[in-house]
Length: 233
Image (tube, rainbow, N blue to C red; front, side, top):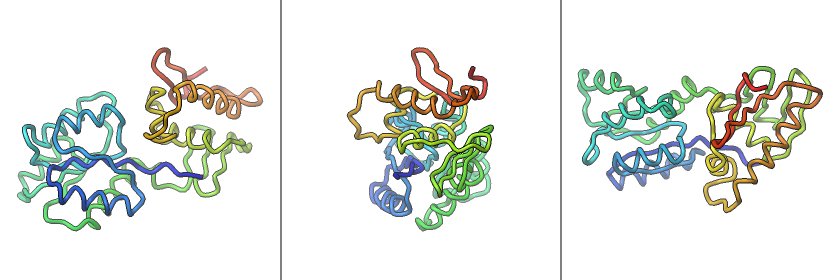
C-alpha cells in the first residue's frame, strides 16, 4: 500500500541549492514541491497546501519575510509550518524572522542533514500525525503500520484508496478539500481521473465508517468538497 508522503515546498532561488535539497529530501521519503520566487510560492500554496514550507529569506522582488506574513494572514494556509533559510545570523534577524510567523530558522551555510532534522522536529511538534504510528480522531483509530482502521474499538474494513483518503482527512481534521485537491493528494498529481471518482470513494468510506448507525464524520460542503468534521450529521 502506498503511503502518503509529507509534502515539503522549497522556496529558493539558488538553483544548485534547490537541486541539492530536493535530492536530499526525496531520498528521505518526502514529496517535494519547488518555487523560485514569491509569486510561484504563493501560487503553489494555493494549488496544493504543503505540510511544511522551507522558505529562503532573500528572494527576488519580495522577501521571504513578506511571504511568511502573507501565509500567516491566509485563513487556509496560516497553520502550515515554515522554516526560514538565511545568511543573516544576528539575534535581531532571528527574532524578526520568528516574529513574522516562522516556526524555525536555519542559518546558511547548513548541511542538508541539519535541515532534514529541523523539518522532522517541526513536523513532530506541529503535525504529529505525520510522525506517529497511529492517528486518532474522535473514536476512529488508523494504524499506519498494520494498515488497520477501527471505530469505537470495532474493526473497519477499507480498500487501499479509502485507507489513503481517510488518512489524508485525519491528518487535516476540519479542513475542507475540493475534489481536485483530494485527487492530487490521494491519487497523485499525474492522475487523469475524473473528479466524480472522489465522490465514489467518499461514498464507500462513509458506508464503512457509518455502519451500524454510527454518526457521519465526513461533512459535504456544497459546491466545494469534503471535510472530516465532528459536527457532521
